[in-house]
Image (cartoon, rainbow, N blue to C red; front, side, top):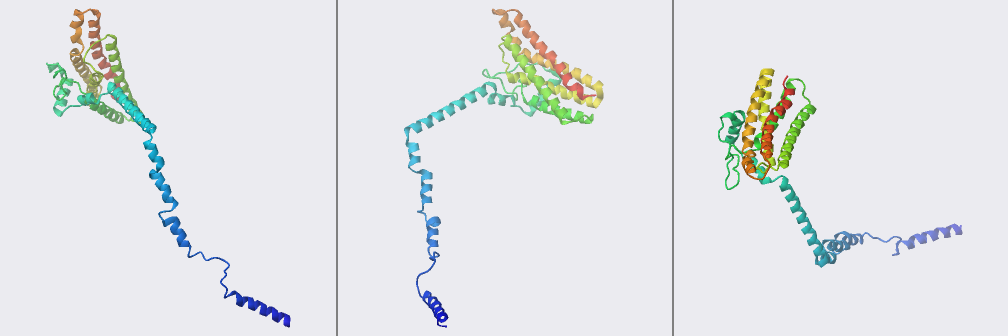
Length: 307
């Protein structure tokens, strides 16, 4: 009995002596947690502040901008970039000048109406000379004889829309057919302009004709093509061929009278100089061939739209 009783008192004494002692098994870190959080996340002087300071502009960044070799490299790179930009702008200006392009779109309603009347009824027009002011041709709105790109552009778009309507009436419309019609019309005008440029280059013709001028004169055919297709849709095949004959003759007369003021004036200067006498005749043939080629293109691009 004494042995169990002694064991009971021993365990009871260990239970009583454990309560008043100050020693604990685990440290209470709840009071230190805010200090650690403040130090890690809320204290501005923590290491993260030092890292952002270095990133924003520490001694390494200052050395980069104060190093003479780095400054010289940056200046050399910027100068190369500026030179490359100037060269690109110069090359673009050689083939497409923005100022020249603006000149061909400087039109108004009065000019457009007069130009359309000349294209459809050129026989009543008397003065075909292009006017100049201080060796600079007047804008289309100031001179009705000046070529423009507004009418050819709008006529091309109208022709594509009219072709889509004609194909839709005939139950033959599809995006592929309309795209083929537009691409064919565009390719023909490109081929025509390239042939003209090559002919003028081979014959060493010095004229005032530019690439935009040739595009304008070649694009005026779309006005006659619109008139031809409309007559074909309204009056059938008979109306189509009558309109084709009228628009073809009018366009040929217009092309000959317009190019005559650009190409043929140099005939007398070549005949008086040391040039060959065949060159003036070839220039005349080029002008006539350009005019005769227009009805062929008109028929090729409009015959499949009228049935």
